[in-house]
Image 1 (cartoon, one colour):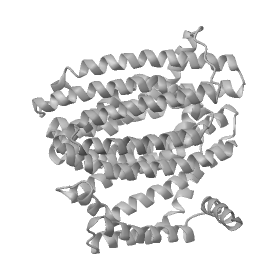
Image 2 (spheres, one colour):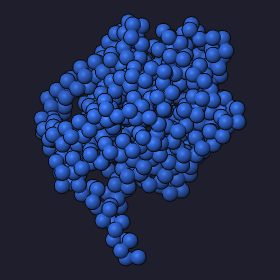
Image 3 (cartoon, one colour):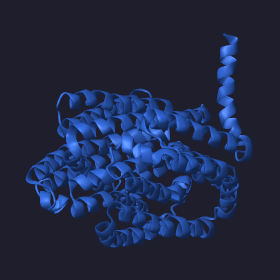
Image 4 (cartoon, one colour):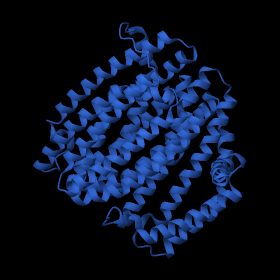
Length: 509
């Protein structure tokens, strides 16, 4: 059942991600049209501020997974119930602190959003900040129940719930926008779905998983130990938020809400791009922690790291090269871009900065499971500081291109060179074997690259229909080339096995 849950979880993750991406691609232009670039820029600028406020979680989610997995392996039910009670109390308190901070910041509009906004934009930004702060505050205690479902690898329930939220939220919000409701309605709808999905997770944990909870004994010494473990996880999360959110805020501060709205569209595409890798990595988090807790050999961890990395690389390169093929036309049709070439370049730079970290997400979990994530946090902290300093003049001179180029440069230094050295030297993962197996895929990508460049240069793609046609041409070339020259037996089996099951069921009928 466990293996089936992992496979189902991975498949549903991609289905969920695909649904979310497609719906968002439809939803974003509608939102942009109904709100206008100014209000959309205000809405999208509040989101990274909320991300910074959620840093109050202190990265304790990783500690919960790690310590609860240990207690689960030891079948220590008393310890499990104590951990559940401790984390619920802790996250409730932290959620209240977040709410107070968010409401306080909403009263300091120019300090938070810069002096390029109008008075109406500042007032709207404050109102959205209060609504989104409440949503984030409520998500804190609900996240304990969500993590509990993840630890027990009940991905079928979790992913179906996520898909329902991803589909219903925009389906209900779009009519509101068309009826004339504004960004406050969008934020309130998100609040409603946070509460609804949270209540369903609570019900599932208590009724189906019989989640034990004990509020009588709050172990402060254990919490101090967990905070000591998570301090470096926390720094890593802070760094990630700085790297991916600072560009949006920098554009807002230096060029105003409209410029921030334009940059946000490229940043949003990069978020979707990263989710293609996270879809596989997330479902393996409990497995990684369980392997480390069971003292599995580094060679086994290296095999998992490489196996998942190759799958992620295949998916990520298909998206990247597909965007090379039709990305410029996509920015014209979807984002209604007035400077599509610039926005196309910004998105490609952001994709490039994401590629290597995205195919090594399992490595990050291995570090955390081993308690060896301090180096990564320190490295990325210095990279984030360098990013923030370099981004100020680059954003001023070259706008979004300067922001994206800065992110790419710091990602190459920190996530590629420094982290791969650390994986090899200290984590003892076979990083040379990892890159050898990744590089074996590169010859099979020459043909798709040529096809993508030919479409981009020689074909005048206009409208969604032509994009779909030429996108299918590229995907066919990519899949054929990878199948013949790149994929190994295991990777082909991932495709053949479900198709064979479907065929057998249809044959019986």
